[in-house]
Image 1: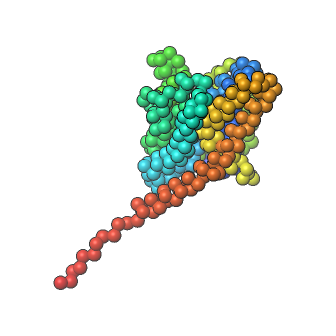
Image 2: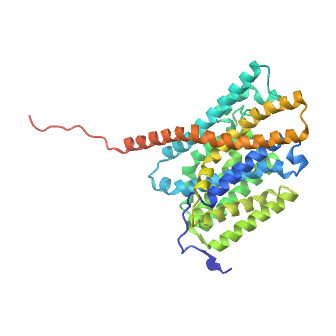
Image 3: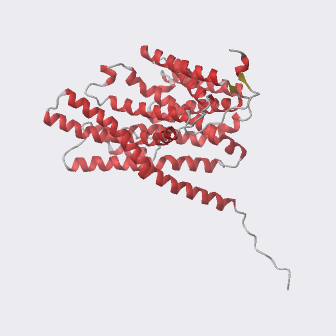
Length: 383
């Protein structure tokens, strides 16, 4: 492949809805559901099939965080850097995107536990539903070293960590725009490797094993890497054929190394290549179905743990009381996975979308109001 397959002279592709990046978001959200539900199977998939089902949490969280930095940089980087969107407006927009759905699902889980307990159906693992853990989780402050946040809707720690990344986004952007694309790419890689080495040296484990209570420090290097990949993608044209083959090769390599072990840094390189390739591969015919599926991905992420707790809270009682055979248990498990998808789509359409439409309308009117020049009082010069 000649070097002209990578060039700074050609115009890079804009990202489009309904393309490869949207497809990746939906695939990753689907795999997150499978990862969370595998432990509730009659035989956990990590034990009965392959340990990769347990390691999936590490891979998918890394994917989610890198992709978040990449997409936000591609979508908002230009407007924030030139000042047409202020740092405050950016943070408010992102904060209001995640908080309403999080609060609804968190409070729904509280209601589920309280009502179930009132009827004599307490959780099988009450240590995961301690009341002293709830305040930090509901306020999404659990990823910053604030006590609490464990249990309940536990995956929300990554949303908490992302809120810190949203705050850092405009300030990181100021530094990146001063550098060339290759320097930015090298910086993103170097910062992650440095963070990883620091945690090994000071704490004795890699950065991806930071506990949920300090999740921001795990998320930020990955989010930063995603931003760097996006800045590189906006400045460097990659031949579509090269991007396509690189993405396929990285996906196959990721699957191959995971069959044997975690291989964290190799896996991270494969994930970064897949995201970079997806952004550089053209989408001649954007798919409305893929676009909609990607829009539902956040609802899939924020609701699946609550659905899992509710579904298997009921099915475990049925299995114990009726002595259901293994095939029926597996059928109930498959139905539970399907229920997570159905619930997420319904939540997106009936609850999340109307709320976000109102928020977008309020944000637009707020921007119009702040952009209007204040009229100065007219001072008459007549007596």
